[in-house]
Length: 117
Image 1 (cartoon, helix red, strand yellow):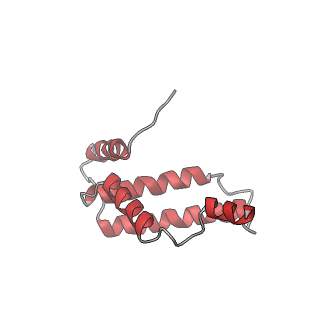
Image 2 (image 1 turned 90 degrees about the vertical axis):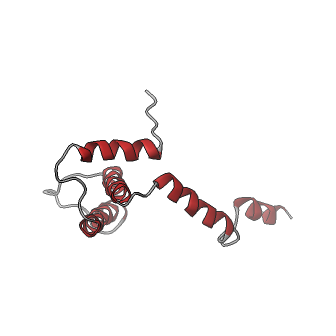
C-alpha cells in the first residue's frame, strides 16, 4: 500500500487532529520546550544505538524513527499554530542551499573527476 503524503496533507492531518480538542495548539514557547524535550529523546536513542551508552534493561525500547516522528509532529504543530506553510519553508531552505551554499561542499562528480585525471 502506497501511503505517501505531501507536507501540506500532513499539516492538514495534524490540524484536524488538534482541532478536535478545546485546548487547541500549545503556545509557541510550550511547543519549543516540547521540541527540546523530543530532541533530547532523539539524542538519547542515537547515543544508545551509535554511542557508548547502552540502554538499561529496564528502559523502554524506542526507535530513532519514532523519535523523529515525534519531532516532526511538534514542528508541524508549531508551524500550523504560526500559520507557516512547511512546503514553502522547505523550498526557501533548499533555494538557500542551492544558491548561497552551492560551492560549500565537494560534489561527488567533482571528486570522481579528480580521480580519473
